[in-house]
Amino acid sequence: MTLVPVTYKGGIYQHDIVIDLIEDLGGYVVQKHVLAQEVVLQCFVPKDDIELIREISRPIFGEVTDSPLVGTEIAIVSMSLEIHHLPHPSCDIAEYVRRIGAKSNMVSLARGPGKRIAGLNDEERDVINEHDIAVYLMGNFETCIEHKMPILLRGIEVPVVVCGGPDKETLIKVVDPPVEGYVGGVGRFMRRTKEVDQLDKLDEIIGEITRVLEKRREDLAKDPLSVAPARLMNLIRERVPAILAVTSPTPLTVQMGGLRVKLPYDTFAPELRRMEIEDGITLGDIAEVVPSRMRDYILVRVLPFSETNTVI
Amino acid sequence: MLAVEYFEVECHEPVGAEYYKQITNDVLLDHNLLRVIEKLHISIDPKIPVFIAVGVLKPITTVVRVGDIANINPQEGKMTLVITEETYLASMLNIFWERFGKDRVEQPDRFTVILYNVQVEAKEIEAIVIGHPSESLHRDLIYALRCVAPEGFRLRSERFENGKFSFVASENTLMENINELIKAKFALMGETP
Image 1 (cartoon, chains in turn cyan, brown):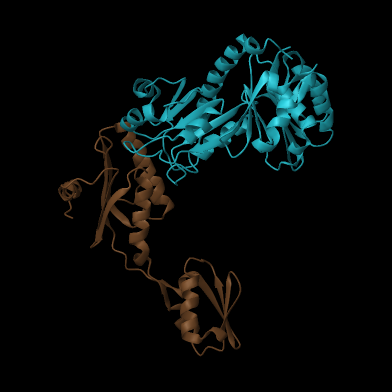
Image 2: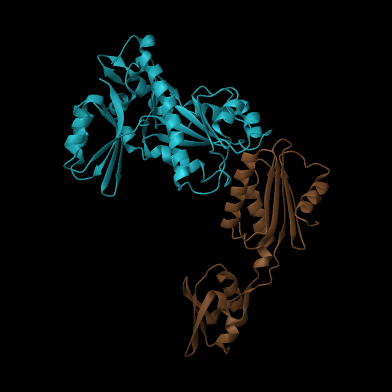
């Protein structure tokens, strides 16, 4: 059964029918937002059953759309939190990827700006590496990008998409070591992205992120994970009641290869490791439960089939 | 940038120059500075790296009076001022307190000020000067240029006299010949520093 990421938008009235249907079909609801009279569900559903969900949600005016970024956590790496980069373009891009289902975190570097003085410390490197993909928002000058990219990419293990002012060909030429994706014509600017050409640029960034993540999904499919992170999320929600008391918008953040659990590591890591998933197999058997560099959260990295010889 | 007589951004990377022209335009527009700048020349060299902005301002002689920001409604024993623009409200209240005393000045809400038993004509109140926009111009201009300049360029040298200004920023120690460079940039606009 192939699960595909989709977004459901509809009225709050009778939306439980849709949630029950998704769960009965073997899908998972990753995030649920209730906005006044509207409900937005980000979920994984079986590919063959999308039409069925569309049909059943039609009488209650629900709408199902493809959301390739559902179930991913993206680091938007901004060179600083100064007015030079915020709210445009950093927030514009972070917000835009959120609209199509991604969980985006803005990672701002302590010494990101400048050419010679730019740097990346170990905490920033580790936080970026906890995400599925990093989107670097660079400036307008190719000289600076060429000079600082080797430093900013040092130790980064996740796929990277570089956005910058120069065109795509120039970025491909100057960024060393090469990265997985490039978007030209999106450097530093100080106006809101609302014109058609600016929105097209944002769509281009989404396209590039999607392309890179699809490739990562294909790589993961070759050696599948021992358990689907979305399933793990539901299990933790059932078995660890403390997660229900967390006020964060996403107490459990689904990633492509794991899960971020927003509970204190020291208190809850042993409980999570002991948590039984099925037939006596515990979470500790099929996943690494490690401390996150983001606050005192827990990071669950699901091991692939080749390491555990188990798929649940 | 129609209001500005001369506006150029010089850089050996044409794409970067175009972006910085747009950024400068947006920042100056946001800070309401386009109407006071007559000439502006920006030169950026990311290789050195250095950012130079030189310019000439239009003469500013206007002052802000009470009549510019409030409508006065004289009544029996009191005078009600309906505020239309809040920017100079604080300085106006200070002037009123000093002149009439705090017991005669009341502000029941954000947009209303009432003066009780003041022996002054409404026209005289309207003519009271409450602000000099040119006083904060230097500070606003430097702040705007800091927003325009690349963020890493934190070593700065600023000059503002006789309606002409220069702003130099770099991430390295500023070069010794910086005054000559400023002079050369002024010459491009047909001015002297």
